[in-house]
Image 1 (spheres, each protein chain N blue to C red):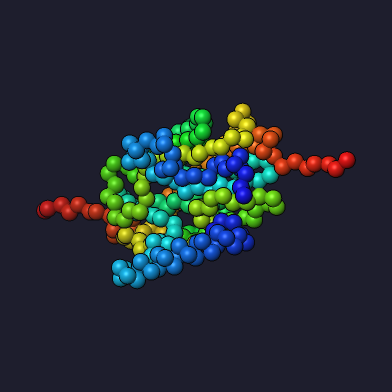
Image 2 (spheres, chains in turn red, yellow):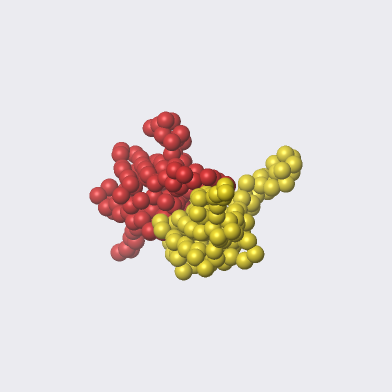
Length: 132
Length: 144
């Protein structure tokens, strides 16, 4: 049996009731890794080309939303010979369960990867119980 | 490319399953090629009057882990996104980002001044500027 409190940052954004369809057209959905460590949940999102100032991470009731803008890949006079890149901004939302310390969220951006660390609140941390 | 976390049998087998299912569709549709075999890194090639620019996305890759070489009209990009092992007591909930070694070759769109090629890697985006060799530049011919 899984503990209900444990369910946290697991679900894809399209399962969220608050997903805004108009956003999905203009934004690409970046890949993400989510890890649970003993004291935190760590989300790592690949957002290559995003600029630090354009990254917006917000937390609202049960969700964490990441938005990031990118600069155009090519100059105006470019003749595209081959194109696989999307050149769009990024948008992704995660469901966040209880048990996260909302005042203790840390985000870092390095090498095109955004790392968000959500510390667990005290009641979610593993605790050892001493036998008297 | 494989999972970024080493020794995680559950994820690995899931990945294999995805591959197998995909391979199935690939063979049904007769494409012979699955989405999971997509070449990495993804690139854009743009041509300008005096040269061209190749842009490749490789998030999580450090400058010192990428190698670029040009030979016989082919530009090769190789490198590695370092994989890591989860600390004890940790688990992966979602694993979509890829890691491992990669290698990609791109045909140069024109003759290139090979000693003037420059490259920079910022925020996970590699940008290679290839100036055209004299012979490849557009030339205006005056009418006598």
